[in-house]
Length: 212
Image (cartoon, rainbow, N blue to C red; front, top):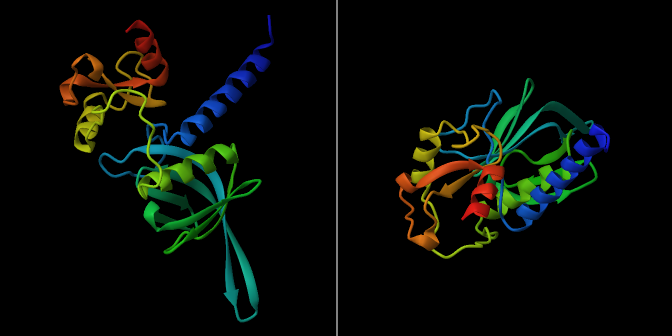
């Protein structure tokens, strides 16, 4: 039997590869907000990451680098940085560049938020999710559809379904990697009405797909 530590490592690497592959196809995870940052009604949280925000101020005496340790959140509409010393939100459409580096990403913004972000976790994952979220907000990245056309779920329906299920999987009650699922598949005549939509975590959704 393989050591538990090795199994956990392999599983975490597989999860990273899956997230990166999904991001490349315009697909982003949906997470429950367990942070102290309040989100807007219906706002979808894609990523949370402990990070350091570093920015350079040009003074008469020369450039001065300021650093703030806090947490970054990526939603379907905003990039949020929250710390004791500095807190701000950036509309994703105001981000004009995300330049990856070894430890994170440099954001170039037409408003506030410009600077370097060093991510504590996996920088590649955080950067891929951010860049995909920006692309989706600007409609330069579109989620690849693998099923028949007509399965798009309207935002107001998603909001009501999220509230109805309390942000948890209908089957196992998980609050991680949630997806909107058609109870009766569109291919079999199912509608996009909220009565035919439920929340499932990725694992339960895959199990359901295997049964159909």
